[in-house]
Every structure is written in C-alpha cells, then in structure tokens.
Length: 400
Image (cartoon, rainbow, N blue to C red; front, side, top):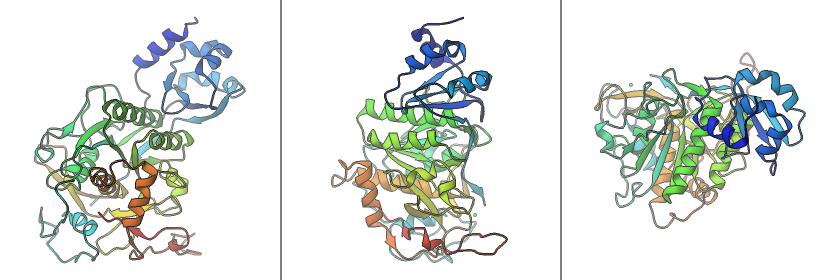
C-alpha cells in the first residue's frame, strides 16, 4: 500500500526509535528532496522512514533491506551506511583533581588527598560571575538523574528528550549523570551556573543506534534555536566511522551550537572513529584525555582530529543511584564534559558570548597550555614500529 508524503512523515515522527545497531542511514545530496526519492521508490512509504532535518537524509529499519539495493541506484542518493551501534566512552576505576588542573598552569601533585577522599584539598579558581550563567549544555548520552542535589534544580529532563526508545527520559546507566556533573554540578562541575539538558540516546548498557544519536543532536539544535540561548552539546560517545554522524555534529556547529566530542578510548588514531574524526578541519572540538601527571591517558585516542586534552583519569562526579550519589570513572568521556563546561564558561563571559563555534574553538586552543603533555607513542604492531604521537597530535592542555 502507498501513502502520501504527509502520512509518511507523521507516521515516521511517531515511529519507535531504531533498535541499537539496526537498519540503515541514507544521506541525500544537497538539493535532493525526500519527496523525489519517495516518488522514485514508492515502497519506501511503508518502510518506516525516519527523516532527519539536521542532515539531508533519513533512517530505515533493517526490514527495509530489500529496498537498499534499488535505493543505491537512485539519483541524489549520496550514501547508505549501516546504522551502527555507538558506545559511551568510559572506563571504570578512585577526587576532582581535574578542576584544579584546568584553572592553573601548574601540574597537580598526585599526592594531594587520597583515593578514598570524596573531596580532597584541590583548589578550583574561577570567576563566579560567569560560570555558565545563561548557557544551556545538552548532554547527549544515557540521560541525567535530574533530581540529584548537586544540580540544584538546574538539570532538565524534557519528556520528549528520550530519543533512545521514546520512553521516560531517565538515566539507567550513570554515564550521562557523571558527565553532566562534570559540566555543571555544584560539587564537581566546571560551570556551576549552567543549565543542563538531558538528551537520552544510549540505553542501560551504554549503547545506542547512530540514527538515534543523530536525532538527539537534531533535538538539541532545534531546542537551542527555539530558546535563543547560547548552547553547547557534550557528546561522550563513539564507535565505528559514520559519515552521517560526522555530518550531523558539523551541521550543529554551522547552526550555531558549540559541540565537544570524545576522542575515544582505544589508544588509536581518532581518524578511525566517529564522531571524533569530525574534529578535523571543522568547528567541532575533539577531546583527548590526560592524567594527573599531565601524560596522555593510556587509553586516549590521538591524531589530527584532536583539539585539546582534558582531565580524564579518576574523575569524581555525580552518579545515578541516589540524589547524593557519586562515582569515580575514567575515559575521554570525562575529559569531554570538562571541555564542554569550559566552552559554557566562555560563552557566559560577555567577551566571548557572541563568538561562533569556529571562533570559540580558536579561543579554546589559544588559552590551552602548550607542550606540557607527555603524549607517548602509538601502540604499534606487536609493540614494533611504534611512532611518537606528537607527529600527528597537538599538545594542548585544557585551560579555563
């Protein structure tokens, strides 16, 4: 049975999000309307098409596989890729030393405090007149425990902000709450006056379909434009290469939304993973991780997409099991919200509030501390032929 375009779009808007890692993402060439594809292949009308607005294209469920071969032949179809699964970029491990490091030019003494102390004697120096005031940060992740006391009522969980499965917008994993806490909680956050918005695109196991992540980016951009507020997207996730996801994060910046993405935790070239590789030659900020000794974290990806390295090892922040819970985890996921918080901090400063994503990225790079990170070597082949990471990677340490 064939349906009109209006029926298709209404049906798609109400359709359940894709199961993790299932289906296809179709990108159309600029100027190619969805209507022309539908008229060329009418069977698409009943195939569960989910259109994007952040990029020119749409998602298809796996059941549409018989149509893909024909779809590839249609004029205006730029690419078709698998709707691969993306993952939260954290590793489990035991004080927020990172806040002190981004606000000083000196290395933090690793002997300060003990691993068992919840709030050791590190000092965070910042201007409380700014601190993210008037800025929204969209944490595109597993959701946020918005009732956590450290958010002081500044965290929002919009009822339409679950792009993972369309259900209740809550954090059932902890990763998103932890990242949000580093961005803007009162105890552990960089920007302590920012408003946090939870956009759920990953499930309880920390994974989610690329198409749903694109819809999450789209949701954040549309909400930001409606609010008229300066906004940052913090994305501590990644997986295989996806040109569609790369295009979506770049499109967010061209629409005026600042974006920070994790470099990834595989100790490999960030050019191999999305959305990290979108940091190359764009306004997207790609974030690697360093430890308390100012060394590149052993897991952190590297390479030409990386913009800056932020604190990402043994990071204490909010957790999801209660309104006072906290946890210590590591990953480029933890370095990314430090950076998103710094971007929000800049945007609340009248000196930078009108800066575009490309301009603010240059401010971030300009303020970073140069040449202090021990970048180390690539992992090489069986330990052989390892090369210095410095040959392809900037040596920029995040600073407020």
